[in-house]
Every structure is written in C-alpha cells, then in structure tokens.
Length: 241
Image (cartoon, rainbow, N blue to C red; front, side, top):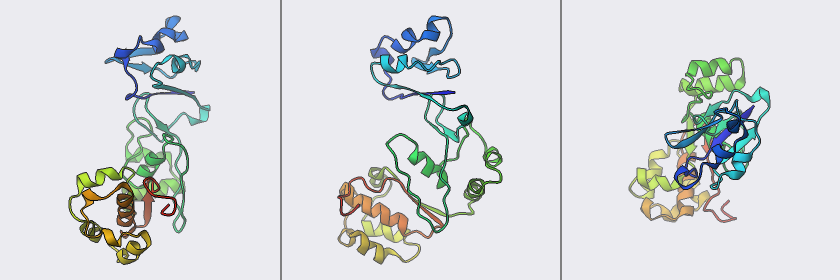
C-alpha cells in the first residue's frame, strides 16, 4: 500500500507545468493515476506505483509518497484524500507521564487532539463514534475513547498555537488563570513557573515565552483526569524547559 500526501499550501499548479502528471509512468500508459480536480492534483493511491518521480519533479516539493505495509491500510484518522494519515495512538495510563517525541508533521498534535476529545477519529472515512468503538472493541484504547466520547473522562489541554490565546481572551493574566484554577493550585504554579510578576499584565502584551508559561499554568490548574500539553518547549530558554 502507498499513501500519497499533497501539501495544499505548497502546491501551485498555476506556476508549474503540471510535472507530476506529465512525468508519471502510469499516466503515460493511460491510467488516471494523477488528475487535476478544481485546479489541484489528486493522486489515486491504488494506481500509484511508488516510483517517486512526481516527488522529485514537483518544483515546490508539495508531494510525498510513503510506502506502507499492507496491514496498515486502515488509518485512525485522515485529513481527506491525499491528506495526512495517522495510523497509531499512544494509550494514556493513569498515574503515568507519556511523552510523544518526533519531527514536525508525524501526527503528534493530531494524536493529542484525539486523546483529549477535541478531535473525533474518522478512521479515514468520516466514521461515527459507534464505528470507532467497534474498531477498538475490547482494547484499553477503546475503553478510553468511549469514556472520552461519553464525557466520562475530564481532560485539560494546553494548545500548540499559544499565539491564538490573545485572540480568544482579552484581559489581564490573573483573570484568565483565576478562571481556570479549579483545584487551588495557582499559587504553587505561579511560583514554579515564575509568572507571579505577570499577573497584572495584559495577555496581549506578553512575549512568547511568557505566554507559554501562562498557558501551561492554565492547563495544569484545571481539575482533570488527564492533562495534555502540546508543544511546551517553544519560546522557552534552556533553563525554563
């Protein structure tokens, strides 16, 4: 099996000669392996031979072809045709800390979004929760996802893109943190994260590092069963990390 991913932001058909389609061997033999729909290329994965020619010929580096073993045919989540696909999830364990490490673009944020209940896994086909439960029936992960769907587990989530926080909240830092302090942990968090001097500052005036620490405190202050922190190191110096 092969998975074809097209980066829609990089793909610029108006500025190229459609090299992906022109140089594709199956297309040259008459197959519609690559076709253009609404001006953008679309790759039929079961017709792709995995030669990688389109990957190297694309002038914008917008195409990725990945060869996968047959047993990985069913993704847990996929962002549409020729979109990113996630094939595995870590299993949260109560009382344990689990870290997800890896380069950008491998699905860490997608996994965290699913486990925290923000994103419903679609199994690559817009699946319902019932289909998800059936897929993971009898497993620890299946039991966990069912509790997430039924609101039987309370999660706290620190978002990856902290620069969006000032767009959704206006006011001073203390106002935000007092709203999230569900377990009376704010004094301890203020000291450990070094944000005591920021409490009367306006959220919009904070630097990236200051905003990161405030976001961590806001997520940690909630009363939850599981805490998810997506990208906690950006903007922080080595000692803060």
